[in-house]
Amino acid sequence: MTHTLHRRGTYENLKNDYVIFAIAAQTVNAKGTAPLFQDFYNIVNKYDPVNIGDMVTGNMYSLSKSVIENGTKDNSIFHAVFTDVETVVKVLKDLKEANLGLSIVVSGILKHVDKCCSEAGIQRHTVENSLGILGNTKKLPTEKVLQINTMCGHGMIAFNLIEYMAEMIKMGKKTAKEAAEELASQCHCGIVNPVRVAAILEEMAKLSVTERD
Amino acid sequence: MIIEKEICIGCKRCQLYCPMECINYNENQRKCEIDLDECVECGICLRSNVCTTDALKQQELDEMRKLRQTFSNPLIPHKTTSVPGRGTEEMKTNDVTGRFRRGHVGVAIELGRPGTGTRFIDVEKVAMAVALIGVTFEMFNPVTDLMVNKATGKIKDDVLNEKVLSAIVEFDVDIDKLEKVLLATKQVANNVDTVFSVDLACRLDQDNTSPAESIAKKLGFEPYITGKTNVGLGRPLFKEGE
Image 1 (tube, each protein chain N blue to C red):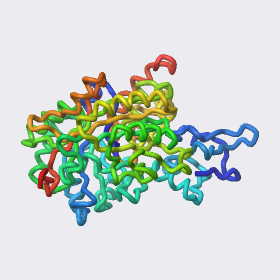
Image 2: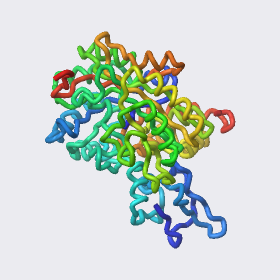
Image 3: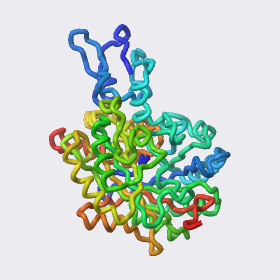
Image 4: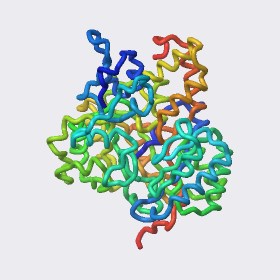
């Protein structure tokens, strides 16, 4: 499951996009971990993440945070999305001190995450690199649509819906924030960064459909 | 998923929400209908609550429709993984499981991602191409579970035409075989009717670098600036050689 990998974008818009999540190994240390995911929630929630979600319950744009917090299970995969590296460092320091024993993964610009780990006094263990998209790439939409679509690794945000939201903004029927949060709600896991989505949608809305290629 | 025609008012709102673009509007009947051959049973149309008349219905699924659902609906855990979603724990828990050790690389080739979907006939092509090099398919993985021969990557014939949102061919390979694997991956990319996303998971060397990334760059791949980092806080920490 590589659901937070393969996020496409530019350096400028990816430098505001970091997902921190917790998971237990089902065959090793998962038993009895449900309360530990609540501890994880309490740590990340202190720093006002722009999205939160658990794969076993849902995300904060479709459920209340308390439902997510209280719905943790031993097979939870609990995510929080942040927009700056300073906060990532603070969260990592807290997680190190809490010593929950859950595996912690950070998705984002690898060099930045490496620096965050150093500042938090953590030695990186394993890294996963995306090598990009191969195959019949003629089937792919425009780059900006891809940048939004790939924020949900399970592919729950339809290409057409992204274009539609850009049109709604263009016509003044939705704000970029409203459109971004509606798209974020589609991603059950809560790993979409609605701040980044709003910025990309605003860029799309400035252009006609043909200019977006 | 189906649309109950008696209830559908033909507003077409649901069409926008379908990642596979398989909800069609029937001009004669003025109703929407789902092309079940293209529908992957991801369920997002229903979960979106977009239908104002509740015409979208989750029908009873037979074995093959359930297979589609398992690979497409992220809320459904697979029997081999116990976690929701079609993927696996891969590197996320590597600090605890030791799944990818030094000298080895974890490779995941996710067909159908982003956003295009795939049939298992293409999944098999990729699996069989890399199997020739001598890889170890991940045991706790839904695609591996469909293989009739884990040495060749051959997948059950009766599922080959089934379409899913995405499917991950996942394996471990000695790092000295990685170059051949990546070349085979590039080659088979010309023979599939979908897209796929490729990634490498690698235990970092003592000097904090990934040897797999260097090999990929040498072959002309351009790894994204973003990636996933397991920060090693899982406990008990897996210790190699014990």
